Image (tube, rainbow, N blue to C red; front, side, top):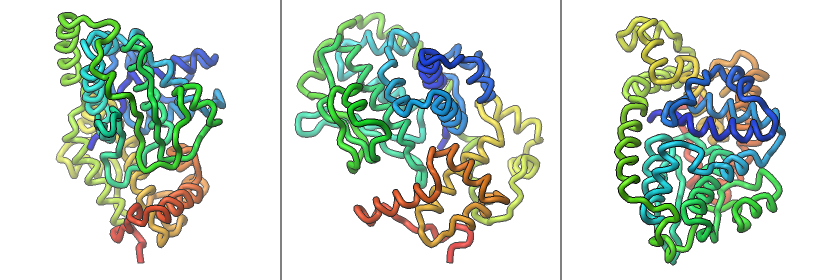
Length: 356
């Protein structure tokens, strides 16, 4: 399963950062990204780069409501063909379903579901990758973006009536009310946003079926051409994961190229074409494996750090905060609380290095 994020989401972070006084160039330089990436909404970067860029902007702005600002600023008219396509679809439901399919294509590690229940049209987000935690800020951003999109498409006539988050508030609860129009429920079983289903078959404010059909053809072609081929990365990720589980295995670029039957240069070029680097994939795997290991209380944090290739716990703690915005102990405590509420949430991993 590829762990990529589309450049249009990078652009949304940069737009809010600019409004808060942070220059785009310095952010891109820090993330080792080129401004050329932003010329196409379906260019891709690795999820690790995406998260690191967000954490950098968060640290510079000190705005814990940053994901809400991003979601509320995500007006379709600002983002080219995709935005105009969603605005031109004849009905709100049809537009929401196309947006859902585009997010599925762009964010392969998340599962988006559009469901109707008890008079609510609900947009739900779940993880597609076993052992991969849903980043709280990303969920807040995506659900707030859905809110903004449907309000814009409907001409302001449709707003959410319920919002659920599985996590606790990251910002003042009144900030959530200001952005969503309702106070979300925190500590819920699932992440979702709900709208009155009765209104979802209403016409959109900018309906233009012929134009939307033409735009959809172009967008579909772009998505097909730009979405990374997961085959190479999937094979590489499987090899990296098996190497981490063996503890002490050689996870060098040379060893990876030999395993895949490629030269080092060819592997580097292939990964560059897919918008990533070998070091980024290694960090992605480390992150997933670390979170899986922390969910089992039998695994000591020091042992996890060593198994992930960190010679010092201090460097492990820095990496973990960069990945999640919190500490290993805080993450483990949160999992302990969730397990107490729902015991099925904890699944020990007997293959983990050092597991008794």
